[in-house]
Length: 191
Image (cartoon, rainbow, N blue to C red; front, top):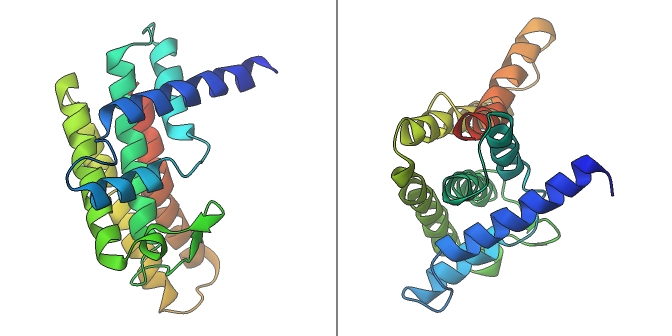
């Protein structure tokens, strides 16, 4: 295993351990909601954003610990909330995510909406003790000029037909700056 692959594997293990520790137990009240949250968070995935938190922290001279664990968990909770909501019938209406039924298919639509909302709320609860600009960084990444704005642009693009040339490129850049780059940037900043 190469150095990069080993670092990624270490970050994934650390992120999963932090998520497991910081998330409510699946059998705690409200159990069905917590089960849906955990079902979505532990559905697999590369954990790229938590790895970026960890590597950015290391690059700045930081050490693994509670601060990094909380930042890794927060960005993964946000990422998962966006996926749960993106899969809903009102958005992309996907039946599968990472090879298994999406949250709204495994549970129901209302539970999926609430699970996504709870994941977002938990992310802020997890990152709040970090102080400084951590909450503002996360909020900016997911707001109307971040993930939510990119998702909105994506939805609007579906109903407007194909654009050509510069207009198409600009729209695609706005979508990806919002839906993808904003949370990646926040991951590096939080690290």
